[in-house]
Length: 595
Ligand code: GDP
Ligand code: ZN
Ligand code: ZN
Image 1 (cartoon, protein in one colour):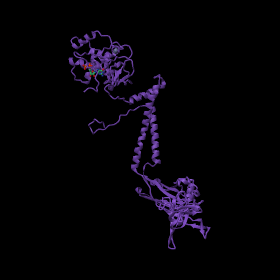
Image 2: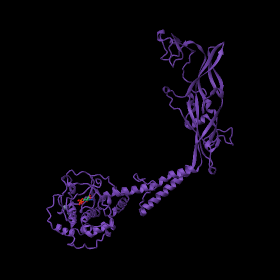
Image 3: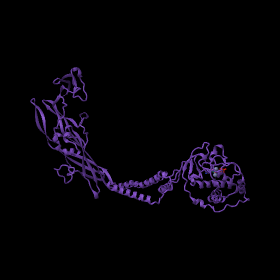
Image 4: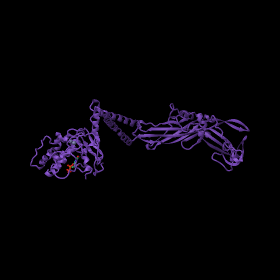
C-alpha cells in the first residue's frame, strides 16, 4: 500500500506488459511445462502430499553363542593352560540405552586383596632409594597410595611401595589373537517396536512369517532380525579378529521409511551398519574400547577380588525414520511452495532481454544491420518494460541538442561553467506520443496580427528590434546573454546545438508547435475550458505554455519536461513573441524548489 495513501480500503495490483512474441512465448511455455513436470514428479516421488512424522521406538537385544577360551593358570608353581567355556552371562554386559556389549578379550588379575606391595614398573614408579618415593603421594594413574618406601618388584627392578589392591595389575600387552575370537559366530536378536503417535500406528521388526533359525543377509534375508556379529563387520569392511583384540564400537542403524497410505502401503525396516569408533590402532591414541570390572569374594574371612580389564565391542542401535500419510494441508502447502518456480520463466526471459539489449547491442557497430535485429528488438522490449526514474536532485537538469539523437542529463552543480559546456550523461529520448501533438489545430494558419490588439502590435515592434551579437557559447547565432543575477546565469547559457549550424527557431515546426498563438490558446483552453484570456495575463500564460510546448516537443516524457532547460535562442524567441511588460524574467526554477 502506498505510504501516503489515506484510504485503507483499496486494492493494489501489478501492471503487466504483454510481449506478443512467438519466441519468448515459446520459451515461456517450454519452461512452464518443464517446471510443471518437475514439480509434479517431485510431489509424487518425495511424497510431498504426506504429513511426515519421526519414529519413536524401543529396542531389546539378546546375544547368543558359546566360546571356548584357553586360559593360562598358575597352579602349584607351574603354568597350565585350561580350557573354559564362556556363555552369554560371562561375555554380555548389560548397558544403558539402546546398546549391548560383547566381551572379546580380557586381562585378569586374580586374588587381589588390600595391602602394601610394589607398583607396576613404569617410568614414573621406578626408584633407587626411599628418597624417590613420597609418603601419601598418589596421582590418577597410580594404583595406590605411596608408603614412602622403595622396594624390589622383580629381579633388580625397584618400584615405590603402595597401599593398594595387591598384587597390582600388570599392564601387560593384550592377548593376541583375542581370547574370544570365536565371538564372531555369536548372534544377536534385535527386537524393535516403533510408533508413529500422530498417525496412531505401531509396528515391529519381527514379521508374522519370522523364522527363528534365520540369519540376516543383506540381499538373501534382509528382514531377518538375527545378526551374526562377524557378518556385521563384514558389511562395513572391517576384520572382526582385528577389532576383537582392542575392542571397538559398531552402530546398527534401523531405518524405517513408512508409507502409511492404504493405496501404497509400505513399512519395513532397513538395516545398515557403521563403524563408530576410529579405526586407527595407534597405541598412543588409546584405540579400541575397554573398561575394568571386578568380581568380589571372601576367602578365609578376607575380602578378595578378581580384576578383569575387559575389551570388547559395544553395539549401538540407532533407530530413525519417518512415517508419512496423506494430509490435505501438507498438499496445499507443498503446492504453494512450488508455485514460485513458475516465476523462473519470467526471470529467464527478462535476463535474455536485458543481456541481449545491453551487452550485445553495445557491440553492434552498424546498428541497422541484420545481425543486430534481435538486439534492437530486445532493446525495444527493454525500453517498454523499464521506466527509469532519476533521483530528482536540486541540480538535476535535462538538455536536448537538435544535432544529437539523445538527451543529456546534468545532475551536478555548474560552479560558473556554462550549461552548454557540461558533458552530462546520455539518456535515451523517450518514445514520442504524437497523438497529443496531432490534437493541436496546427493546420489552422495563424491569424494575422490585428493592430487593434495591443499585445500583437507589441509583438511586431519587438521583432523589429536589432539583435546584439551572440555570446561565445552559442553555436546557432541566435542566443542572447542571460539577464539573470550573476550566480544563476550559467543555467541559461545553453544553445540549441552542440556543433555550429542552423537554429531550431528557424524551423517551421518551431513556429507551429511553440509560437502559434492559436495552438497555445487552444492548449490553455484544453486544460481549463473556462479560462478568460484577458490581455494582461495572456502573454505570461502563453509564454509559460510555449516553454512547456517546446519542452514536451523536445523531451517527450513528463518526468523530463519539468527539469528540461530551454536553449537561450528559444527562450528569447518565445519571450519576443509573448513579452513581459515590466520587470525581469525570473527564468528556470527547479520544481523541487517551488513552494
Ligand atoms: P516570469 O514569467 O517572469 O516568471 O519569467 P519566465 O518567462 O522566465 O518564466 C518563468 C516560468 O517558466 C517558471 O515557472 C519557470 O519554471 C519556467 N521556465 C523558465 N525557463 C524554463 C526552462 O528553461 N525550462 C523549464 N522547464 N521551465 C522554464
Ligand atoms: Zn545559440
Ligand atoms: Zn538556436
